[in-house]
Image 1 (cartoon, rainbow, N blue to C red):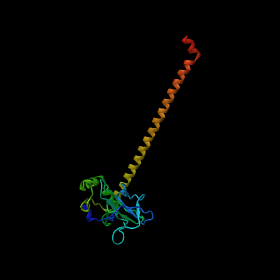
Image 2 (cartoon, rainbow, N blue to C red):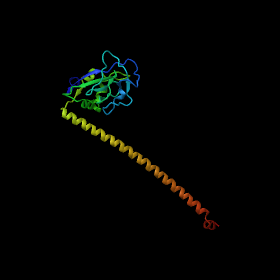
Image 3 (tube, rainbow, N blue to C red):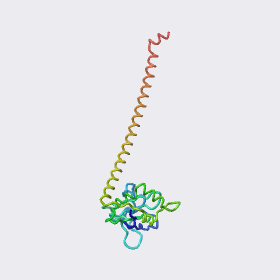
Image 4 (spheres, one colour):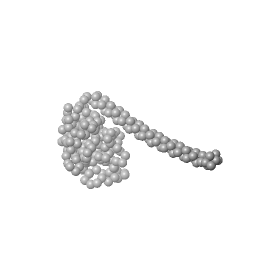
Length: 216
């Protein structure tokens, strides 16, 4: 076991003091908590753009090999910075982690942080009654199982397969429910048709000459 502070550096995102306003022609994408997907990736669609980033000096743009981490709310998801992405900066509500590539991969660190067991620990470490939040020290002291780099790659690959299987099962269940709905509708239509035919037969029999004679 290693502490995260021994395997990665942590810094805070850019300090936007006011509401972030979308500028369609802005150069920088701003990563906020809503943009961190549950699968460990960033959701670029709908991400806010800005022309300027507050703070002194050059903007603190995210680099490949880094990851962003939610610090507020009830979910503390992490996501890797994608390759070939436009210039991006993280909002101040996020931590930016830069792993030591000789010890831990960004994908493995995201995998670990997003595990349900880790999320449960993080919720216990969060402070604040209205909007829980995590302090940097809590993340730095978090114990991190550290297998070899080779095993880290294997675990990440296995987790992706498990996620793909879960997605397939979800889609299959949705198709099964749709099939049941169609079957129920077809059966309802069939029974309605049978009832209609039965009523028509009874009416026809009542009007038949033979039936009139027998009633006399």
